[in-house]
Length: 192
Image (tube, rainbow, N blue to C red; front, side):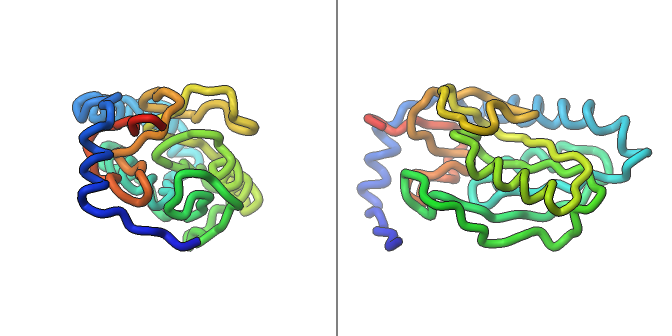
């Protein structure tokens, strides 16, 4: 797929016309809430099972993963798994694994962190990969979860920061045609 870059003017127009759904302050509170919930869930099992493995899902999941991981105060390891359906576009296509974790998953508690749970197809494939590679327990954490009924596999993440409308959103790792991931709030694209 050939990705046609947007001009600075096009990017600015999308940002200017977008609707702010969640402010930067709301995002920070959501990260705190996710980290607290993960800690409360896992801390009792660490002595028995050892430190969990956090898997960030690039590209978008790197943003919430960094925020959440920095709030966790227990032993853990970090790796990543890169699977995508979008490849810079606005609609999903066939799933492609671009990278698999280097750290073995066998007999581990794994927490997969991504930016958003939309239809859940990519996340479900990642969870299957983790289980097929021997993970004892696989949990999911997402900053945002879209409100719709088109989720054929995963209905909800184990840890969710915020809900968003069923619109095309960007910011906090989520992109608009590979741009605007670095916006500190979550925005909805006008007309999408």
